[in-house]
Length: 476
Ligand SMILES: [Zn+2]
Image 1 (cartoon, rainbow, N blue to C red):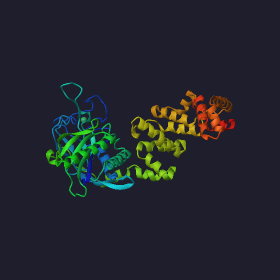
Image 2 (tube, rainbow, N blue to C red):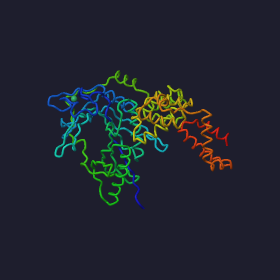
Image 3 (cartoon, rainbow, N blue to C red):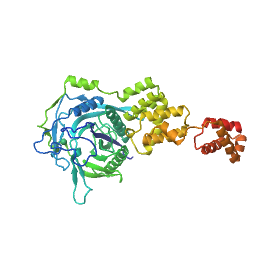
Image 4 (cartoon, helix red, strand yellow):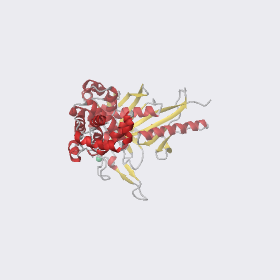
């Protein structure tokens, strides 16, 4: 009988914090400036430059730590992680090893109707490295230190996940929490959320973990899912062939759907960590901690309860809408503006989700204003435009945030409910499709569809569908 294997997965998640300035200097964290425009002696590692900790970084880290049920380390401190790499001008990264800001937390995930706690081992604050650019010129690499010193938190889970499905559920939960806190936009594609997957396999029922590998360069949930599946199979194949899994860091190539060994995996001792002598310990007093606790925004679980009470929408709707902070914000404002929460929910869940998928976008990328959607809902509810025109107009709102009222007038999209006009057009449709007419008269209800279709086409989609139906039935 073939052996059964269990996959054991733990994650290291780096999240770029949404501060305006870097962690140890006052340079801007803005994305996309000219190379090395946002730099100073501190973030380019000049000798003698001294780091000064950004208070906002600590507050975001505390907020995240509290939201994922961690204990906040009331006296935490920074250590130097020593390694040489050209994107790291100090030759060490300022990070936290011995006393990270948060420890021993968990988040709850749900997969296939089952709830499970994924424990968080610890979360620490650290600085990001610069970026190497290899393809600009042929024979040299360039370095851009704009990202050097951008604040990060690294959230290290326990190896509690057993499948790609659980991993994605964990990441989605984490991302939602952090987005709700406003601590980061958590965009995988842009690197503000980065995931390293530690994976090992073992025979089902074994107590001991197998040798794990770490996979990097995973920049979408799809890539993470594919990488987990491929790595699981690679390790099982090795074991089946009587070979060993080597502890190493592997780079995932999503185009080739394969991973490649990058380097043998380092342990903490390889980095010769020691306390950073330039920074004083971070002491969090009771008052500070209480203030951050009091400032925690409404999280998703709380919104779910409130939506039921305030907007009376089904739980399944509320769950879908609150899966993204951006979506929830748009929903609340739209619902209040148009006075029709259920319609607002429907537009977000159906058309908005469809367009996001079509354009390969995240809910956080939604750019239209709630006012536009609210007006559209009112126009459709008042019968000013019919539902198929409303869908077309919504595509314009989604893409360009147009004013639907103005657009409908300009493009002449108002629903035609003038009976005289409709009767004339319908008479033409009846004349043109004798087959459908005789089918309908012969008892085939469905044949009416062809006549409605023909009428709508002649009306360029702008007829009142209920009225068309009524007149058609009369005239037949
Ligand atoms: Zn700087």
